Amino acid sequence: MYEQRIEKMRAEGLLTESQAAALQSSLTPLAHAFERPRRRMLPLAGLTAALCVLVLLIAAMFAYTSSGPADLEIQNVAETLNTPGGTGAMNRPLSLLVSASLLLLPVVLVVGGFSWFYNRIVDREERVYQAWSQVESNLQRRTDLIPNLVETVSRYMRHERETLTAVAGERGDALNPLEEAMSRLISDQQSAASREGAAPDNEQALARLAQAQQALGGSLKNLIAVAESYPTLRSGDQFLSLQAQLEGTENRINVARMEFNQSVGDYNSAIRRLPGSLIASLGDFKRKAYFEIEGDGGAPVAVDFDE
Image (cartoon, rainbow, N blue to C red):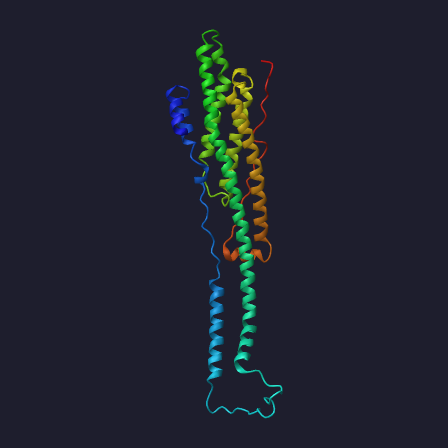
């Protein structure tokens, strides 16, 4: 849909060849730029093997005691201990069952505790990826709105040039700030879309993405601020609607980013505390990076409302 719209804008002369190519290349969905690691499996192979060996040893002991040597001398205590109503010794199968239970209890406790802590870390990691998907969704929403904003501004600039330049020749030069702001927005969007990596596992890739998104946010603010100097554009219903949607998207991005950083903090704490640090080393859990953007996404632009 956006590809056809951009091609139509290029055919109508609203965009140059370079601007159309840059805008086309920036429409790659952000969600496909990041590969999510495969779902973790519980690494209990070693503990399972130990448990099997222990069960086999108990079974062998049971088999040996139940089929002992034929000439083994057995003390007959039936007359003294196993009389009706008297106190007798525990029978052999029950004794073996109790012994096996006592031997297996530590193993069961260790396996159960390991599984609980491991699953707890997995749950926190899943929350990180869930929160990151919300960040991606809102970043993509902003990316989808930018072509609409570019089209609105381009049509306004074309209208201005066709109708007013003939009346006032300097009017064409007056559109230069708006055109520069729009070109900067397209360039920054292309740069932001090209940032690929394995976020949030790759701290360097996430930092580059944060820097690119900060620049893109600054370009959006700059374009909207410059548009304040053009009353005809500023009063258009479509522009006002796009501005409201973009402002709402920026707020959503900030909320999603804070929730993501909170999830990352909980996960990083879980894998650094004992016994989570031991389990994290066995399960190859890695520290996640924070999605931090310095400043407010660009310096504010001075706007003169007296024009």
